[in-house]
Length: 506
Image (tube, helix red, strand yellow):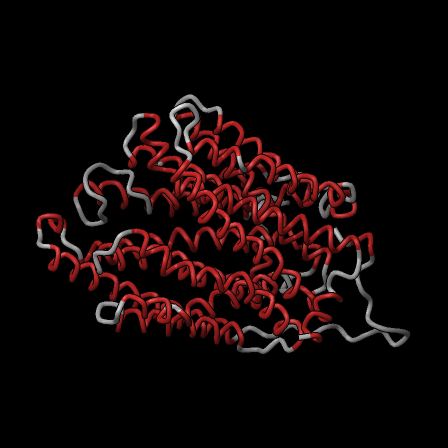
């Protein structure tokens, strides 16, 4: 244990490094806090403004839509104007958006402000990885990434515990409880903004591309591609939430076609400009491409977990939503301590097949759930999730460090943008695939069936979806197995290996 702590002390051995880690960790915590209140408070917001929950769901859609479609733009803006500056602006936007939501007078204002917060989260996600890559060499990034990932999990716990209590006991007529939830984000946001100030003061040292202008046409096209892709998996059509009904087919198929058409136009335009928004030549670095593919597959499984487990518990087992929390909280608790261990293992040993083993661990967890979820006692479910919990929280830390170490440091903005873009696209794809498979198994008239019949069909849909995730994770494990581990460059003959100086630690 003493050696473990000493190993981490070497990562935070300068003031500049500690400032970067504080800012990055605070930013990730703030993003989580800006997301959880909406999930918890959606019924209260809908009731307060006199709308249905389905109509109020646009609050969630707007945030995810803007975040997923602008995160790469945020990274490229960071290349041009400085990653610390863009990260700092993102923290301000989220904090101001939370205060605006407190004062909102109708649902439209809340939806617009949630979209604004999504852009702020995109600036944080797109630039935070690049800040860490500039401050820490590749052989220390595993331990460095453990801090913000842990901060994100702490944000999850604060949201579930503290915000849940506020919504339960502070829903006063004079000041709705959901407004108090968003208002409580103000002091946290101000603390995060303050923690970013020392890093922003060194912004000029972190500017990568101060000469070339941004290809804004390419940016607009990529935002459009990402936005349409995310919307293509959402049930914005009339009728039931299905992928096979006539209403669904007339919506989803044209949206998928529009996504492909916009992607073709985007690639055509980008190949004909001198400074493209997306530099395709980076994908010729096969280890970067392999790491990005693994990242997409991993985040697909993360969203599948958050979609499938509630379906299995509520619809398949007939349990109340509180039982979902009881199962997922132990799963989330691994994210508080396991990233630190993962970062230590990555930096000290860098096992070649670590990410492969993590993806196979996730796959084995879904196999266990598919086999035993319908027959095992309820208290066994968190234990069935154990392989998923371990694999997820180790892989996340290690893979972030891996992706950011596969391109030269001057391309950290591109690597950071792609890391987060594939993360969000993986989430969207995971949600779509999981929901689609369940919809194929569960008939449209399931609401008219007896509870035992409907629960059996939902369990069958869960099992088929879980096995699909197993196949994807297995394929991802094979892809990850071909990735070459990081090899630190040989030290110069005249002295020890060079380390980033204090000025670079932002």
